Length: 171
Image 1 (cartoon, rainbow, N blue to C red):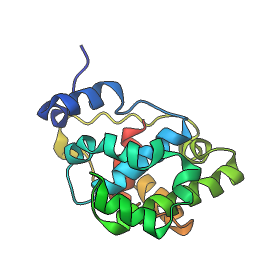
Image 2 (image 1 turned 60 degrees about the vertical axis):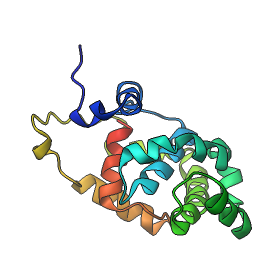
Image 3 (image 1 turned 45 degrees about the vertical axis):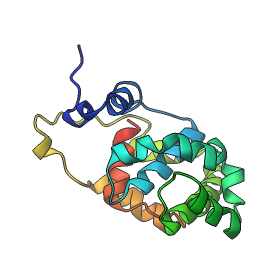
């Protein structure tokens, strides 16, 4: 039996996420975008709150279709904010559009968002062997570097702490 992180034992939803998704490497740009949106939405909140809203996010953002999200209008974003069960922070909702646009630019440059992200680690997951939760950093040199690059490319809600959590989630 594999060891489950302590944070994953708080609910069935958290356990399922931990056991089936967390730290599982992905090359699927749509999934990578979904996780980036959810990690950005989580800033200042708990992951369990965001996971509970995940289906609402999928519905509101058409399963994280990049073209759909990149073309959202101000009226559509306000409608999502007021009429769906997503986190109501307007700048977080607007970041979905700006991040979709930025990912599409990266896809043109690199062929995929996955190739871009995995280029930071030569395509290989980083395995950390922390014995205690207190050893886990909030951010790393890698998350600072990726965060800085993403911000330079127009991404929003991608600070080094958010990006460290994002990179962990994606293996």
